[in-house]
Length: 243
Ligand code: HPA
Image (cartoon, rainbow, N blue to C red; front, side, top):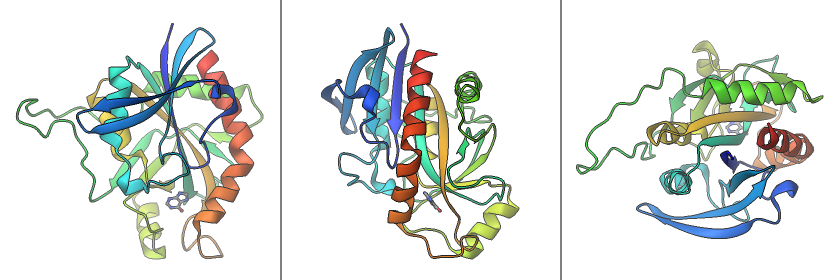
């Protein structure tokens, strides 16, 4: 029996396959985390909707530490997280899925560690590869069995938000090697590493990034684009749990 967590980003609030799960509030030293817990294909599955019920929590306000601590306390071994992203890479188009392999962290205000308290001491974790290679392979193998257009690699630039980026920022990120831009993979992926859980991400391109897109960006555009990809993402989540 695997112990798997799914962290659903924008648009992924209550996947059909996980609907008969039991809702539980898990208390942590960092606050409460709402988890939906159930069993699928013989595996324990915990679902967290990152932005909360009704998408009320902005990316810079998500309680990443409570979510990751709760998953650890429930015995989670593998975390599969979804994120909506803008694309800087002309080959990565709206509707495409990307199994990121690298991160550039441009967040500013978030507490990004569990090791900030004298009792726990100081630690410097290795983050050369921010996503678990074994889980990335699993997601890629699941994607090969679908009709979803996907990319096996991508560099995720995490911005602070909640505003979208300027055209100059996007130009700079592209020069630095970024492919995608989103607001939530940090510190989530890093906290999972500190808590010694395998973590991987699958990003869904919802729009071309600021200055590349011919029109101004809006959250409703992102949500509408995600709506079109929900069936594909639910299929991938189901395949990942069964794999
Ligand atoms: N920028 C930041 N986050 C995003 C975007 C974007 O263009 N699209 C979806 N999430």
